[in-house]
Image (cartoon, rainbow, N blue to C red; front, side, top):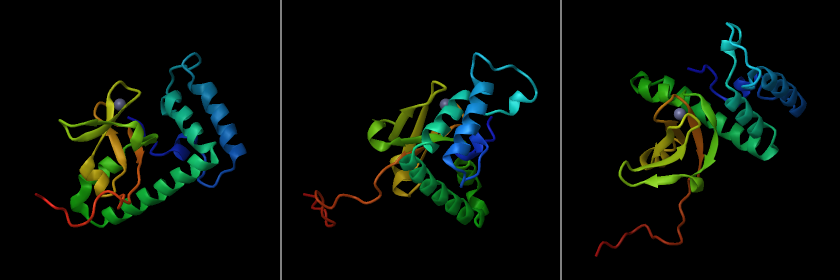
Length: 171
Ligand SMILES: [Zn+2]
């Protein structure tokens, strides 16, 4: 569906753009994509969705969220580069390039013990899912089971060494 893979692309701004540029781009896109104003035309089909415009702005206008998003973006780019060298991982790469809607803290996600995934509602009515395995492998992206959207999962990679020692006692 969408060709926009990150918040900067949604707003059509550069990764080093100023807050003012981001605001200007947002205002322009909101006017075009708002459900009350959207007019179906060939040109408008190329526009991002209203929801993704909102999300992009919410992330990029906040210094803190933007910094976090930039970090994740760099990490994702690095991982995609690394995977490009390994063509066998094509499917993983395609997954990784799903349009990213925003980010969610792992604490806000629910655990599905049957499917063994963390999940979070997607605007389409489906849900974003990420397996514990993926998180452990450092793939912090939950992908919707109904549409092709994805969301970054924010979580601590470091484990608490408070409660468990490395040698597990199994008796
Ligand atoms: Zn969805």
